[in-house]
Image 1: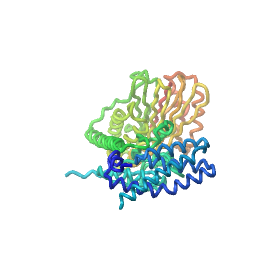
Image 2 (image 1 turned 90 degrees about the horizontal axis):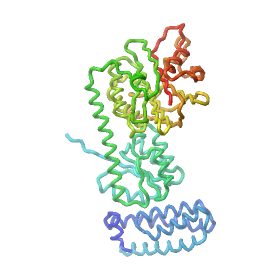
Image 3 (image 1 turned 180 degrees about the vertical axis):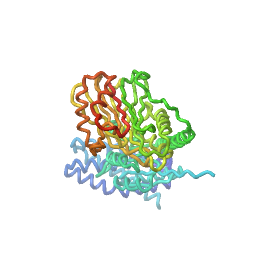
Length: 108
Length: 373
């Protein structure tokens, strides 16, 4: 995960990008939890909304893995399909944790 | 002395990451940025701060982007602010709905910063160009001193417009006026105006209107946009006590659509070949009084043989009976259903004869335009 490259792709300085990633990490936590509980309960509306949020934020920052996965969850959930959603969410969390890790390293 | 051009952009998105990203890049370009994370907040800010451009996310909880655009366009204070919306890549439907509601453009998500900046620049330029167009039209009209007199288009001059007209003025400085003009091969415009207030020479106003119609009614502008441009110039050139009501119908014979915009004028009567006459009621503010105005627009599908009428309130008002025009609409509808078989060239006169009470002297100008599709 190369922050300076991602920053350059969107035309930002790295420190500006780091600030946005912090915001992403901060705001996504609750949406990921909402997504988890929506998947567990099979709550279509909530799953679509939470996945949509994560998708949008990740997409704009260039976190393509998280973008693709949350997009898939959103589209499936729209059709009321939750099969594989938990696995996809776990994959999102792995990537999310990596981002948190890089962020911690950048800040130290 | 050059005034510094401060351009303010309002960003509306429920995602704080998207908002911050857009804010960061726009600030860097030297724009002023205000942000909102919900529809109601956005509308409040739009009214208070009058941004030059709004970037609006479609998918938001509670009040979504469509609802926000709809309300912004209905509010005269915010109707003219260009809106660019943010939408998912594959949502063709969303894009079309957005355009129909009055958005000027869209940006697909996830967006590329370079694209956002390019579109923002483009739409700000267009908006500035439109404003300076209004200024230059205003200046030109101020120089227009002597008005030509005989400038009412006759049915013979423009046979393809397929209309008839009844025009009678009560005072020599008549306050009513009409124009019929060709916009493109198959597109025609029909316009009826009623001027209130008598402090400027009406001939000057009619000349000005004629010029404004020529400049602003073209295939590119929607009729509601034309009406707004005309209003913006009239506000500058008319005195404080003068205003106009008007009705503008644009007929596209190829696409068979009739588009109607109304500025505080009695409603158009639509008389389908098969069926009963009905009123086409469209909301809209009077012309030349307010800087911030709203004009609704209605598109109806028409067929060859259908007819419609534009007229001034003199046709239906009965001052002797103390009736205002809105009370007389049932009567005029009935009159219309009686002239179904009248040939086009006799339509306007026939309707006028049916409506005008010969026993009392007319107290107002009367214009009737009868058009056949």
